[in-house]
Length: 419
Image: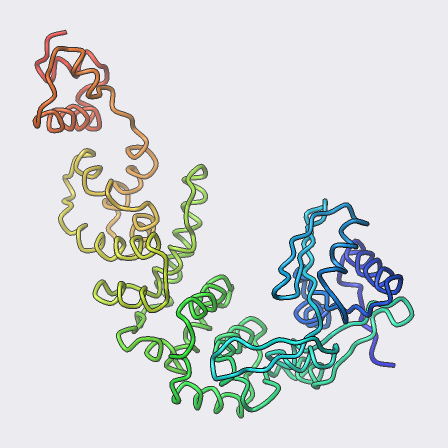
């Protein structure tokens, strides 16, 4: 009998659910296991609600039957032999058919066929993720470790399962660095050499930008992101992705700025839908000339690319904003820019206090001011639409922003329009 896991650090609710899954597996004559990150984090006493269940059989059919018992929703992906149950309590559980994988060529997506739990574990990225726990009632909690993952976990070692692992799937290079930083572990020296060999062979060029983008997104969501980004630099991953990509040597400072920017926005602009992901990406792409090129390589969506370019442009354009600028001038300069770009630039330590005050006032006040006079109002006053209309409307709104007028009547007087 293998080691039995200690469940004292997980909630009794999760414990009961896993027991229910095990009993249901026994009733339907299917072996079921909880695998991967959940088991890993139970062993090192970290919370993890990312629950993956492997079924030696048809996971889609198993999930549908169990969802009926739980009266829960299920979303199936038959082509991948996977399904997700969303329970009424909000908890999501992923069910995967035990499988074996083969890679037809370096960097390609794998070919999949049914397999056993041992085959399923041996196809995984790292030994610390190739751990499973039995859920059957008579062996509940028993650890399955066919790759010495527990030993590596105890030693703080990130190790792949075979020598072609990084060539088969180069995105594992990013994940190795992410796990190393998250857990303060060390990538095995032999694996570091394999990573360098894989990079030098140009295998990263064989995978899509979208897959690389996904891995960087995962890294940017980690608390230890700065350390991870530095490690990406050690392996020259940015230059490998594209020769023009050279993140700022002041990345730590930019990261601190981004974190402060997000905190400021959440506190000062609680009702604004802030794209925090865009702010984090601004720490990596700061050079105006390379943003578009790298965005195309990674397949970044147009909206994100626009925000990144706007941030770089805004830093340049702010030089034209004098200390004596009026609110209307601040509005006119900042209004074309995405809010995320303004927030990021606002919180940079290099910004003088007077500029921070003006930009903050724009975000918290000026940006939401509505014009007292519109085009319809001018037409009602007998003016005919013309090219001068927009100039007249801006003159009225600027006066309003600058506090020269506070009522519709005062605006008419300011514009010398008889009411």
